[in-house]
Amino acid sequence: MEKLSKKLLKENNYYPEKILQFGEGNFLRAFVDWQIDVMNKNTDFNGSVVIVQPLGQGVVEKLNNQDGLYTLYLQGVKNGKAIKEHTIISAVNRGLNLYTQYEEFTKLAENPELRFIFSNTTEAGIAFNENDRLEDRPQSSFPAKLTAFLYYRYQAFHGDNDKGVIIIPCELIDRNGEKLKKIVLQYAALWKLEDGFVNWIEKANTFCCSLVDRIVPGYPRDNINEITQELGYKDELVVVGEQFHLWVIEGPQWIRDEFPAHKAGLNTLFVDDMTPYRTRKVRILNGAHTALTPVSYLYGLNTVAESVEHEIIGQFVKELIYDEIIPTLDLSIEELRSFAHAVLERFQNPFIQHFLLSISLNSMSKFKTRDLPSLLEYYNRKQELPQKLVFSLAALISFYKGKRGEEEIKLADNPDILALFKEQWSKYDRSIESINAIVTNVLAYEQNWEMDLNEVPGLTAAVTNYLFEIEIHGMKQAIQTVLGQKKAN
Image (cartoon, rainbow, N blue to C red; front, side, top):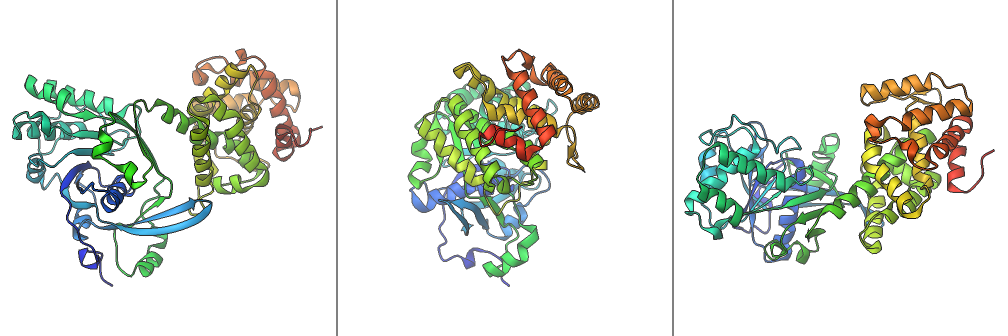
């Protein structure tokens, strides 16, 4: 069977190299490069990507052997239907290995058509390494590699402000663009680069913060033989992603003219402040994940998809999102409901097995960052407690007992938190007084909550009552109480 190459493509367009991309991993290829491909086909963007492999080991050799081509499968719920579709991505022109092709990397800095730099070097990638030097070939850290590249470009064009670039990191850290720029300026100082370069960084280049969202399972090892038969060609770089995508970029609106994602129908937003969008994602998507996990798992379910599809748990999750989380957020109700609808479709994705136990890792800190702000803001705005969030907190305390019926739950969290719950549950005697003591001590654990939650009016009593219902009657009966379908005895 023939290997994927340009010979297999009916259309074989050449696009100018407008984009330098640090990282050749599954996410960037299924998210950024896919968007470039869509823009090339549907707008006048007319640009290709040069991928830099920042580490010694990577896949650029395979990518170059396939003429920069690879197949992307998008799988998930789209407009209410489970859809699986694939396309060949042709946005990548070539790949470079910095450890064997550094001179080509420096040569790329002289390209007048280069306009964008994207990256995804993991959360640990945006870091300063004081041992990096300008003369290294290559430098160790990603920001040092970037600083060197920008300096080569500054020199090649003699500080021409028209030859600056737009830098949009995709690493999953807050304010990623600001942090990257700060480290670039640190290297400029460490390497004693001239003031003209620092001024050029400030005036000619635009660092944007961004928020990316798409689940990308990656290379489909389990069924690659089946996929190869379906495709009719060999592709060593097949990548699988979900249908949903969102890219929020905080930066000047003029960038939209150069990166016309909106004209291609892509869910890429250029905004003045990405904070509300980050809050929306953390509270709705991540918050719902964390809140449903102990409830659904103790009910007897094991995955996100079956939880949302379930008559009882599905109702719980939907009411939690629409009635308790959305009212605490400040974007338009239409925007929030649309995002929530997309989240629930993603949760129902039949092509992705998202196990509740994998989400349960470090649930205490996750509840604090993802769900507690909604709980407190709901109380702040309405002067009453959000009952489903409170019930989820009670379920979380029950989950940390480490038992689902007779089955042991393999808890994974900070040793101090596990020790706290072990001590508290050792005193349980099926009385409401012992439940109240457990709740009081857990809510008082300021090391996790950064406050004493017993001070929230009515919270201790509400969590105690729900936890007592869960422990005495079991989750299946207790959840009926919070759903208002049936009062427990």
